[in-house]
Structures are given as C-alpha cells and as structure tokens.
Length: 111
Image 1 (cartoon, rainbow, N blue to C red):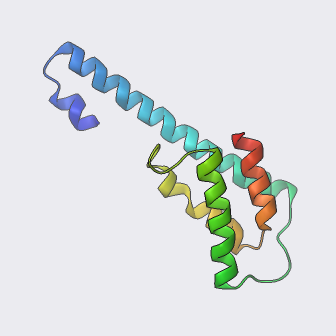
Image 2 (tube, rainbow, N blue to C red):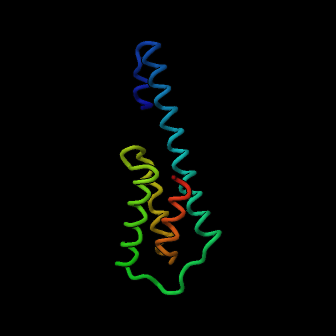
Image 3 (tube, rainbow, N blue to C red):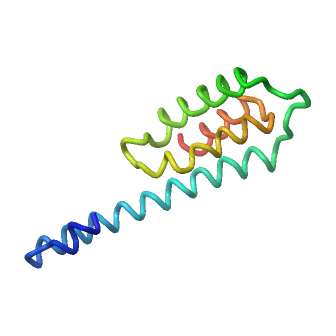
C-alpha cells in the first residue's frame, strides 16, 4: 500500500492510497490490542493448570482457540497482521492455560 501511495500520479490516487494505508494501520493496531487484551484477561484472572501439556494437546488447544479467534475476531485474510500475533495464543496453551478459559476470553473480547 505504501508503494501505491508513492506511485500515485494524481491527487485522487494519492488520497485513496493514503486512506487505504491509514485504515490498514488502524486495523493492525486493533488486532494487536485485541491480542493484548486476550492475553491480559487470561493471565490476570486465571492460573495455568498444573500438568504439562503434550505437544499434541498444545496443538489441539491452539487449533481450537485459533478457530474461535478467526470466527469471532479476525482472519489472516482480513488482517494479515493476525499471523504475527497468533503465536501468543499458542504461548497461552503452552503455558498450560485451559483451552476453555482462552476461548472464553476470545468470546468476551470479540463478541
């Protein structure tokens, strides 16, 4: 998008590219804040479970949580920056927070 802004030949093209870039940057910030809020909600109000999850359990947790995130919040297609922050959901699973608790935080913040 910044390339379009620099390649704009008319004032109208420049303004359009500028608005698109601004919206994309706003969306990226909203996505980051959403992930921040989910992590804060889970880690502030809940404790990890005592047992360590196997890699398979971690993957199931992450998959379930990310599916709900895509359904309720944003998809990577809508906002590519989701891919940069999705690992934070994996980290919550890896740290032992219950899948249901993470999903509940997603629902509370994105519904």
